[in-house]
Image (cartoon, rainbow, N blue to C red; front, side, top):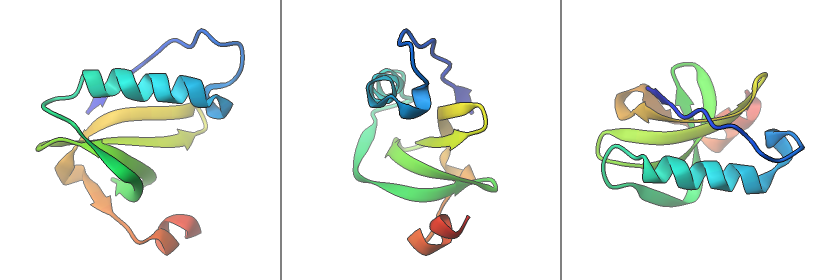
Length: 93
């Protein structure tokens, strides 16, 4: 697990700022462990027991994002920890 901590320079919350999110994604893709493949449609997944969204992947890792109590989270997770789930299951959580 590689935490991608980023300071935000904008004056509003990252949970409502699409510009901050896309800058964080671009930076995470530059720091990818291998050559990243960006998903055309983000996919609902579970990382351990946490519902998240897969944005990109490499041979060994998956870039996942989610909104938590601490705000927007984005990190590369080992692919064996990430499980795809049905959209209905993700919406129910």
